[in-house]
Image 1: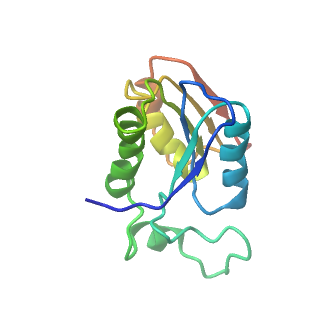
Image 2: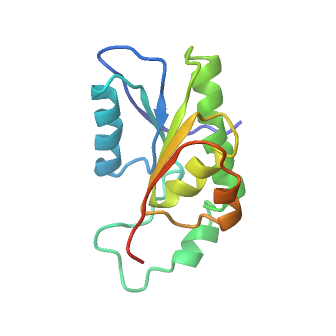
Length: 151
């Protein structure tokens, strides 16, 4: 069993659709979860980085993205996938939600797409996609919103 830190933003009014977001400790991502909650959705945001996020601000010139991906804690798909797959199971089996939507930003887009091919999610929205393969996109059989970056 893997223990994962999760940020949860509860709605003031209830709906049947929780949404999963990532990354975890970045305040802008927390604001997305809070906005989902303000609109009646449960925002569940797992720490996909296991406490070791990529430095977003003041990243040193020597930062090695590949080294970070395969480093000590491991940010490779097999490890992160287990966390991502656990959120819909948890919200459906233990929190009483019958529908799950996925929201992914940057690193999290790969996992939002994977949850939706077909999978436990009913709809997905991704922005600033990274590491998503063409085959993963082709496997999608439902509504997907993509906000793509210029490069």
